[in-house]
Image (cartoon, rainbow, N blue to C red; front, side, top):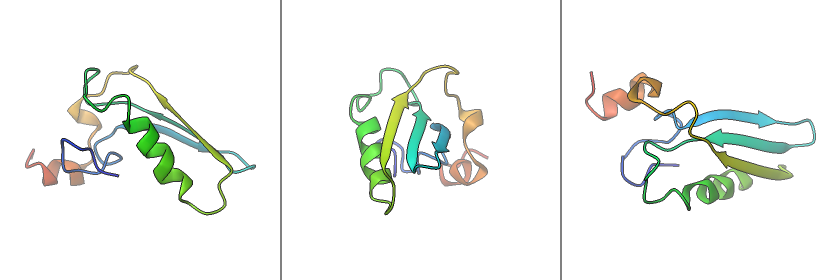
Length: 87
């Protein structure tokens, strides 16, 4: 899934902090945003939920939006930095 304002995958941007999958196939995700005032803050967790639930065999998915620790560019992968010309 891509960030709607930055043309980079949200995982590569470092917005996904945690993904846990239980033995019962329940998924729990902690994610953040590049800024607390992001215009899609209310929608993005739902988009992540819907994308994850497309994976066959999963029972449930809970996406929690967290802001601690705050996101910064150091969380980005090298691939994301290359895509955004940040090297």
